[in-house]
Amino acid sequence: MSTVSANAAEKRKRYWAPTILFASTGLLALTAVPLYGFEYGYSWQQWLAFLLVTGLCGISISAGNHRLWTHKTYKTHWLMRLLFALFSAATLQNTTLNWCAAHRAHHRYTDNNDLDPHSSARGLWFSHLDWMMREYPSGMKSHDNVRDLQRDKIVMWQHRNYLPIAIAMNLAICLVFGWITGDIIAMFLLAVVLRMVINHHAAFALNSFGHRWGHRKYKSDISARDNPLINIFAFGEGYHNYHHAFPGDFRNGVGWLAYDPSKWLIKVLSWFGITRQLRTATDMQVQKTVQEVKFEHTEQQLKELEAGDQENWRSLLDRERADFCKTMEEWRVLLAERRKIAQDGPAKKWKLAAIQTKIRDLKFRLKMQSRRLRLLVRQSRLNAATASSIGFGK
Ligand SMILES: [Zn+2]
Ligand SMILES: [Zn+2]
Image 1 (cartoon, rainbow, N blue to C red):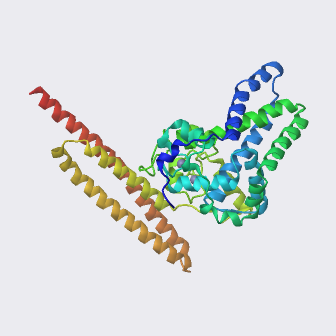
Image 2: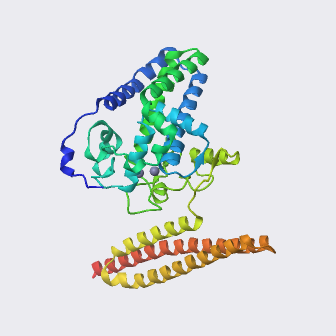
Image 3: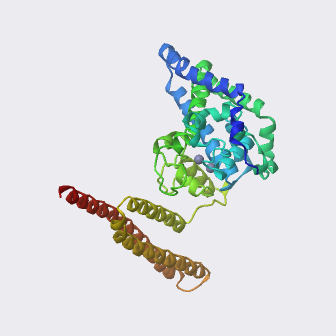
């Protein structure tokens, strides 16, 4: 793919449709939604409908557009794909095909200002909204990276009929829930306008704030971060640093209890055979990545010390690194053994349990090593501070 010239970014034709959409829904959410509430009030049934539609639309983007179609982390029944296509169209976040093309480009060229469609290095406003509202060369839509999705009949049907589907879905949401709760205007304001604004800005916040504030536990050389606040509204997508480290994993929050409704839905549906071939990173891959980032941090902090001080601590760090390589090698051997045992007959359960115990020991070793790395940094800083204060006293 040829590099797009940064100078071409000067030409910025405005896209009026998204500009008017974001401005009008935002304005209505801030004015008409509370005013109508003060005047007439919203019933609990209307709030329930709002939560339901917000969930359906948010999950369709997260579990559908993102984890199913962009990253192919699992497979599912055509009925689920149809539901995802319908409700993701209702969010007015562009067609699934265009959404996936932009997101795949984002993963491939993260933080490259010329090629990442919403590179956070170009500022919060650009990465949150502006990249969709103006013609930037980095946002030019190419379908070269979604050829596989062009063979998906549901994706292409939604792509060709996007506007009628989006309008029909929002109209249906408004009328059906308006009829059930007895107030069409209230449902237009809550289940269409407010829901759309929340779905929009939760997804957009991942591109802006999710690449600016939060933790980088799994990958430290990119801007993507784990941000718990965005996570609440983005249905688990807020574990964005993990996701950039392991985009092929159907989970974004690794642990079963980590708040990630999309992961829970995909997993629960797999028990009924509705979703299948769920892909995950292995425990070893995740632990290895986390530990490598800890080593990078320790290394970085040792660099801040005086050259003489660095040497002493560096030799300790080298010992830790050698220990880490040994632990990983032992883990790899155990996994190979486990694969062999899985085909074995006698005492299979006992052997598997024995290997599991050894893996647990290795994890404990990594945990203790993390503690030692923290101590190493603390002690080295303390020593440097003491040495400089003695020097100052002289
Ligand atoms: Zn990202
Ligand atoms: Zn992604």
